[in-house]
Length: 385
Image 1 (spheres, rainbow, N blue to C red):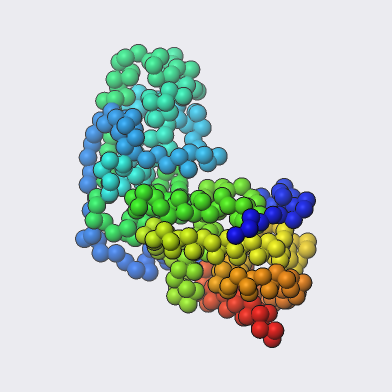
Image 2 (cartoon, rainbow, N blue to C red):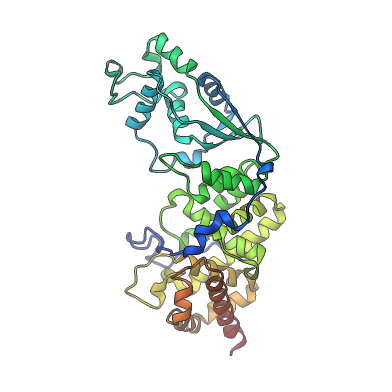
């Protein structure tokens, strides 16, 4: 497959294109947790009260996954917040419990407590945190862990914690639900970050690695040029693959649960199948870029004054449609790009279609509407109707 090139002068489309179009999922998404109740007998969670030194030892030996993908996010705890946590430990104030997925005993997955563990890791192990703006122990402002008196170092190691372990045998979909309920920290993980976390125990995180590889491709970067904030790009790609894997006709809101199933499917898929999915996806993005250029997956195709930001429902429906036709058909559309642009401009000005990509976009009827209308448009173009 040829490597795509962005149109001349459009390598990095205007700086204002730094976000996705706001999406209205609709009220159906509020009901996600009650659609399909789980059997509580299948939940296997144990509690223990180890010293913090036990968790520190696991951190030292890389037996807790701190998920480095999250650590690159721009909204981590500040140095002051990290320092206040350490100060709380030093003066023996209680801190919230830690939750882990213990499917793999050699590598616990953090469910709740990521930022607290990161702060402890930065201070005790990495030695990169200097205590700052302490409220009570002001004499130790500016100190690293090694500069603390041994008595205070020991106080950290002996600090008692509460640890909840989600044990093997708890169904993966149930873990997603538990993760959402437990994820209550100051910096809550979003749904795709939760999927990333849960996927690490399935084939060594194969699903997350696959999505990361896809969104780092030149084809993807040509049509989605904004910063990948908190795995937004991975979720966008997952939307495409979930609809390809399960078929649009199988979709029943809610979208988050549908994407959870897609993530699980990707994690269990054979490598050859993943390669086929990837190649068709990238071919669809290249075709979209060749036809629509800077207006790929954007309402600005029909409304030049509209902010040039990717519309996620438009992205998923168009990319899926273009991936399901063959290479010859994609080439035909590229060769007839002016006709294709005209047809899609008409479609974007259709009130019914606009509603399906703008309001209650996760609603089952709206999902079916936009996919059907896109597929009909592509089919009509290819058959000359």
